Image 1 (cartoon, rainbow, N blue to C red):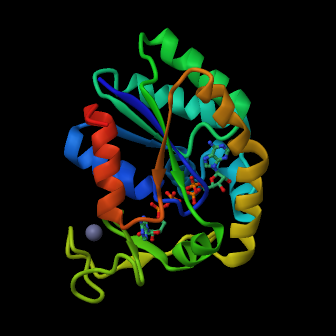
Image 2: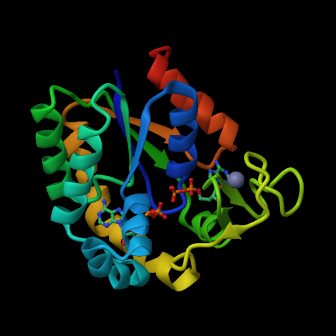
Image 3: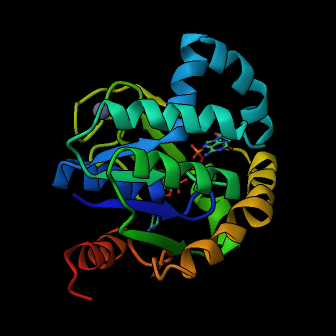
Length: 217
Ligand code: ADP
Ligand code: ADP
Ligand code: ZN
């Protein structure tokens, strides 16, 4: 049962790869971004706290996101986990260690998706998803096969994230550089970090991640 972290700036391809791994390997995708968006949509106390912070592109508190991850891990005791967008700070990385140890799990890999910042803006402003099943797409890089129809569920309704605009993306990238990138040495010291070229095509990135998970590289 593997436990892996996908690390990379907004638009690096974490969600795309995590959703694929969940579908193909029976692992569970644990995306704090998705959990927070659900909380905002449902108007829960966590959602009410997170809404404005997310719209500015800043980070939600470590305590909130760590608690969300703990709840989801408890509900998926027999599944490998893909941490997508968590941890994002040193405090979250430490919280994750504790959450895993308490549950008899351990981290197998931290996969860093290495990308070029200028390309990220293009990825993010072109990102959209199916309003019914959540499948992720891109206007240019991953369009639906039939225009306006979801490949997976046939829905014709799509949505775009409110925070996927150029100004917010710049704040999110600055947050990544200031708070998230500095956790890499924490994992490097434990020999866990594997780098993957996130600029490659989606299928190529997928094959590289698969090779790491299968232990063939
Ligand atoms: P992206 O995949 O584009 O990086 P996410 O969906 O992971 O974006 O996150 C969207 C927003 O949710 C972030 O900008 C931040 O406000 C909040 N968020 C998500 N995960 C975390 C986290 N682990 N810690 C703090 N804030 C988070
Ligand atoms: P993250 O979760 O890291 O923020 P996403 O997986 O949502 O990133 O990807 C951001 C956008 O870029 C999506 O529209 C997705 O379809 C597209 N995308 C993901 N991976 C690639 C890739 N390797 N090449 C081109 N576009 C990609
Ligand atoms: Zn769909």
